[in-house]
Image 1 (cartoon, rainbow, N blue to C red):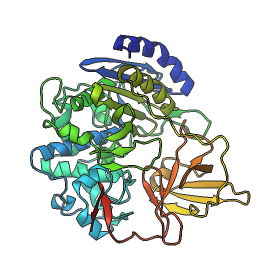
Image 2 (cartoon, one colour; image 1 turned 180 degrees about the vertical axis):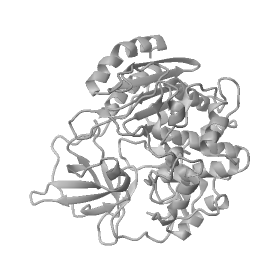
Image 3 (tube, helix red, strand yellow; image 1 turned 45 degrees about the vertical axis):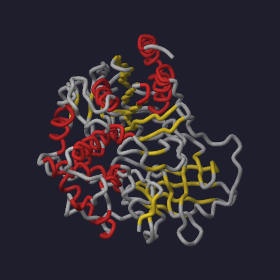
Image 4 (cartoon, rainbow, N blue to C red; image 1 turned 90 degrees about the horizontal axis):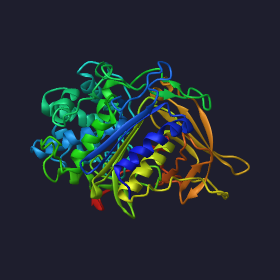
Length: 477
């Protein structure tokens, strides 16, 4: 175990060379142990402007915003305005997706724990007006259902936009105003921005991307994604210390440092508790709560969330039993390797928690008959085609569509090798990560029904199966 003074000295000394090592332009960090907080930053907010990062610089937090959205929803539950196991239709009668039966059954809980089952990577831009979220949710009427509600976990950005709309309707004001009134202000945050107009008031980080693999990171073509995706993580930015203040509220049973009871006693713990298991993907948690990603480790449960936007990556980790939290915000490069070095050291020193080992391909992968995996899996943002050549090497080709194509995505072909039962893994890393590919279910012909990469991607041309679904170990008709 160590103390915060030792960590500050280590971070101040080691962060600059680590940024250079991993080609990360800038990073901001904050660490809390009990009521004590330290923070810092290093690097350049933009390689073009050469503005240096400071502890008060704001970075986009990406999908960590989902924890803010889920907190807004649980406030409604605390007030008796929402029941978790009632259908979303009870509150949003106009909610529509392509599967009418599923639309009528999907509950608030299933939206919060990513088991609603409809396709979730819908990045439609419906403008910047205060009605953008209302328009976005109305546009989901043709989105397909991938599996019956409650059957399995599949990360769902669109589902959190629906939850954001729920907050808007019940509060009678737009999502950004709800963030400010019910979270940002009670928490006493001073460097939090709900859109680009607010972010420009601060030293704001610019995301950096690789336009071609190996060509180096350059400032991204745009600062943020569409405002219509704000509840899922398209806009919210802040300095690390402000995100840490939010985390401390969760560690302190919903109470802000200034004394405001932001969540009712016991609500934060309910949000952190287990709701659904995940496939053993290695790069994600082992289970999920009501918004929170969970890592069930030998030393205890680690909770938090990651966020990725246009060239920015964010990490939040919390150890409730030790009242320790750490934030790392970055703007490009191999952010995952930086996370492992920085967050891994903090958690090890302050909480005795070791990050789970990242998945890697076997040194001597064997050969298998990949017939069960072969075929095309289709989503709105890409198509993935798995094939096996005459030498029994396995390949996956990704062809971007829609939003991914508009953002400059390009077709890529990658070799996969056997990893675990019904799982393959790439031979080469992508931004420091080897992402396991899990193949689940059966399409009725012996082939996998889903390719799971954190979200379930359905085999092209197959129908949603009828029958019973399973959630939390209980069957539902």
